[in-house]
Length: 93
Image 1: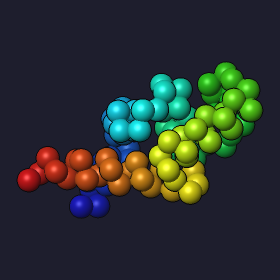
Image 2: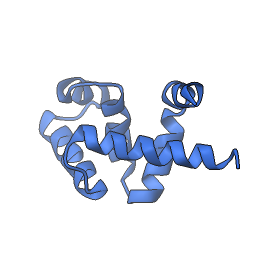
Image 3: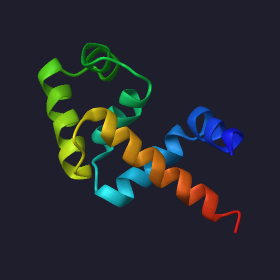
């Protein structure tokens, strides 16, 4: 199971982002922000990477957290990772 989780983390970021969009109706930009959050990027780094303002990044992060009904950015990532993991494991049944 550890290998499946590692594979998901290393190779499944876009797949996870795409599933997140469908499940929570996140915008494409919110999915980008969620993916960068998963990389551990700070708001400042996300702003530079996406070529948007720091305030805009903060707004997107807040939208992601709200749409996923998460308590924090870490909780939002855990919710999405758990969903993706269960979706991947269901293919083995």
